Amino acid sequence: MSKTPVTLYIANPRGFCAGVDRAIQIVEMALEKFGAPVYVRHEIVHNKYVVEGLKGRGAIFVDELHEVPDDAPVVFSAHGVPKSVPAEAERRKMLYVDATCPLVSKVHREAERHERNGYEIVMIGHAGHPEVIGTMGQLPEGRIKLVETVEDVETLEIGDPDNLAYITQTTLSLDDTADIIAALKKRFPKIQDPKKEDICYATTNRQGAVKAVSEKAEAVLIIGAPNSSNSQRLVEVASRAGCRSRLIQRASDIDWTWLEGITRIGISAGASAPEVLVEEVIAAFKERYDVRLEPVMTVEENVQFKVPAILLKDQE
Ligand code: 2E6
Ligand code: F3S
Image (cartoon, rainbow, N blue to C red; front, side):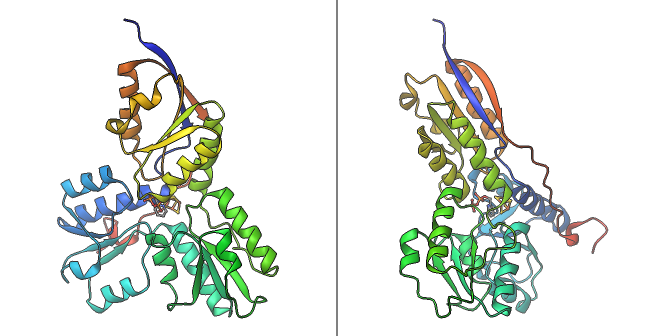
């Protein structure tokens, strides 16, 4: 029997961003330099496949620093950590390497700058997410007020609206955040914007590419983990553009009955999802369908971040 033809629209850019690349490289280089085990506080990036791969090479993942012995090297995840974490590591004289994405660290420094300049700070983000915990933890408790929705803006209690600034999580929905910022500006016209956008380039570009794919496809599959904020946002972008859309961790998660009768399918991957999983998904489609691949290119990316000097060969 001949296979049904389907077109797979492959979003570009997709998958690993520069911060994820760097974070994974940090763990790999730490394993090489210090030898196993290397402890990692929190999933280095939100992807089971990546985490399992590193476990296989001798990384041990823990939730909190107290689970790490004093004399073992430890890496902090790409999402960033509250100030209390490196402080505890220093106190215990631990060897630690910080894999916080430089674009998350940029937001940390911004929060500190606002604090120094006497501003009250509002953070737009998702409560409980490790990046939000890390960013809010750059300042003493209560200094940064979190808003998640436009409704939250209405109930915000601000002491001096003339000295107010906002910062954001790096992986938010561009559209939802624009609405929240508009609500903040309506209530607090003098609120200060970040010097440079806090939502990162990778989030912006991946959402743009999924929008472009959603114009061509009927259904969109996003490869990524349920706890990956940026991946979840890609699913939302596709559904808002009128496509049915689902998050899958890998090919075995594809619900083929959900795709029955659909011949135009968009595919993308969150910033923490490795390309090998995209290839696996395409291969699964090829087994069942007569696949035509159509890349949908939006912008080119050429961002790269350096790893910390402590991991370089000639550094002790
Ligand atoms: C660090 C900061 C932002 O859940 P989230 O999207 O934040 O995290 P990952 O690990 O899925 O993506 C990479 C990342 C790391 N994004
Ligand atoms: Fe960094 Fe953005 Fe990736 S904040 S880890 S470049 S999703």
